[in-house]
Image (tube, rainbow over all chains, first blue to last red; front, side):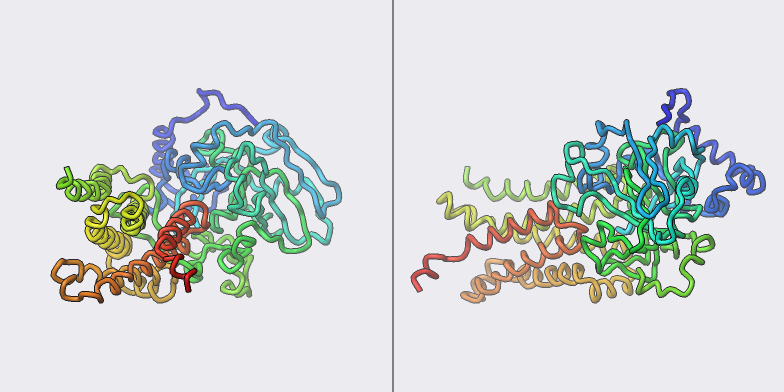
Length: 301
Length: 192
């Protein structure tokens, strides 16, 4: 993993000022700078797209490997060892490969990607990730014609991850995407946050982020990517198939069996701030709705 | 000394309320303030349910009669914190938009049991005075056994709203089951 010198790290204040500067010079010029981020271009008009603070993003996490309460990941992940770290890409591919984090950071250029995160629990953040499209990495292998899905396996290490000593979930954490979802340009390999190295509690050293799906789909600390023929059973599907579907697209019209998904709370807003309406595909419908044409999203939730 | 027992329990029981008021006015609620108030008041409701249920086992255990003397007061605190919890949900979280609230109560089982538990607390609160005790005589005791049902509903409410039963929902569930089991007269069952 690339080491950042302290001088290379942009303080949050300057970072935010820079963003408002980009904002102030208008859409024309700004889209030049961040044209690769579909969401960012549309975002300027909307107050709900204010960046969530670095502190909230890094201290309010769902990462059950480090404990089930929101502050646990920050508290329990600081000594987690993220180097050396290898990621193997295997399964239904012509030639499986294994890459180290160093190799990956040399091979791919990370860019800033500001995406909204919607948690299945009904809260949301806006996060300035650093990363690149997963498709760039996946194009390093040739899937066989049997490959239909991509499975992501996170690390299993109960000595370092104390949450894994209890059967909270079916460890190691497992997630999956259909190949076209995995190859979609919005599906991101995350390497950093706020221009800094990705903190452990946010899934370092290697996590993915799928902005139009509920947060739990975006697996953290991944060690294995596997092309498979059949739809994988993710850890959350395994825990409760009625509640967590394979697709788990953000959808205000399909309620979680136990709570409504119509509205959400924005993290960092004051106690008197109202809920806001949740958007279909978390606001990324223009980019991703075509992946699901003709599908009954109530059935394939 | 003994005359200070009940007043001091009263003062201790108001501490959670003072803490959450302080947190609201001094902005100490963290990234998701409304959820924090909801969880805080909800958990204290469960704690007071457990405290209320511990009084008669404590009396047996310690031979100290005064435990039962504060039981009704603790029960009123259950209603107090449960009402704060309900108000946070209806007033602060949903801002009195009744349609989604109504949908939640009907469709979401965790809200349904939580709401049912609060409704069941109402007759207990109304009949909590000395006067009512005398008026209802034997029936008072029977009526107030509703707290056992309320305790179970409250614990189910917590289990069903959580993504996983580990660890707090499980803890309160086990604690409530233990406290209820202590009430079963096993001697009588065996003699039968």
